[in-house]
Image (cartoon, rainbow, N blue to C red; front, side, top):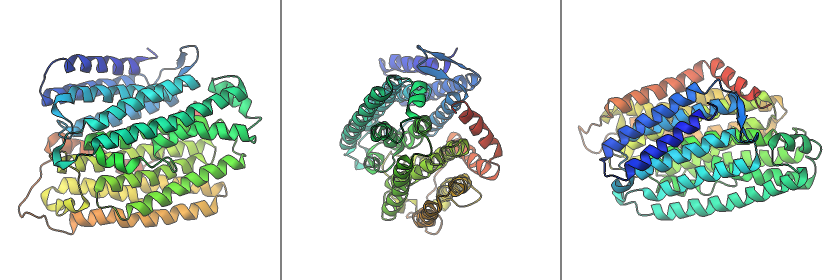
Length: 471
């Protein structure tokens, strides 16, 4: 029973592999993928109360890992629901596409439960290589021809950061004589000020910085966001970041908060992400590229919560990345619906969206308002709590810089909303119906964004309970 969610994902992937041997239609494959995604989500819900360890104590099942698996399962199902028949994916590899998506989910779920360095490495590579393969599966609709280039870039950059991480793991083993995180915690508590320990920790963090799109391991984001299919980008933008946050919490908690070198490095990465992401997003015309640079900025805010080296900061980071996933998925739901043929969507293509589809325009507006940090949505509440926790730690100048970045971000988020509401569609009378399934998903995402922002207490309590399992 301890391995129940992962086992269901594995069986789902096997089912999709068997389906790939035949020639079913795209709607049939999509319906099956949604059913399998729902089964995975139910398995994660059933596994919330599980507690124990597997594989010689290298795999920990507790409230922390199970909450993250629930978030991964929920985000994956939402992506499957609004993807439709995945028009951005080649018709002849639709089953294989969902096969690799499920393998990626399996790797991410294994990652959040891994508490041993080699187990972490294997889980990370399993999740990464599945997504590497998904990127070039994009069809050539909309005259997009650089998906292969994007896939190669994603692979090469990923292999490079994996090398950094593996080298750092070898340092940790050499310093502590163990590959288990519990043993490493005890050993590193006495040597976090040593240069070798700092180098080891930062090299291991590099692998998860890459997943989270954090500066200076952000360089893959805009090209992959633009080159991958809209459905694939939606998955990359939300699901791996949840698992990366879980592992950052585990790794950062290895070091003591009084390590000035580590705090300085994390501050540099956090503030650098905010400024780089927001300033580059200001000049973007492609909506996915804009959201890609936005992701770099938000990664800086997620890391901001870890700088407190305390339970409150970790819980707030968990809360924030959950809200970020909901905000991002709301935006990508609109992209996947408006881009009916799977083409890339320019910001100018949003012209008159409020007339074509009031629900999609509202979904996009609330998603972007929340990303910008406008109250009463989850983006504002999450940023406010992150900044308050950092202020209590005496990080006054970083808090001011983070607040300044929130102001910068308003410009490019509101420019997209202005295009949707303050312009007329190119063709008069043009309408866009999202369909009952996508409309239902949009309403659910809007409710999550508003509820988490207006009444964060319950969500924070769940996050605090999850964090307590690893501290």
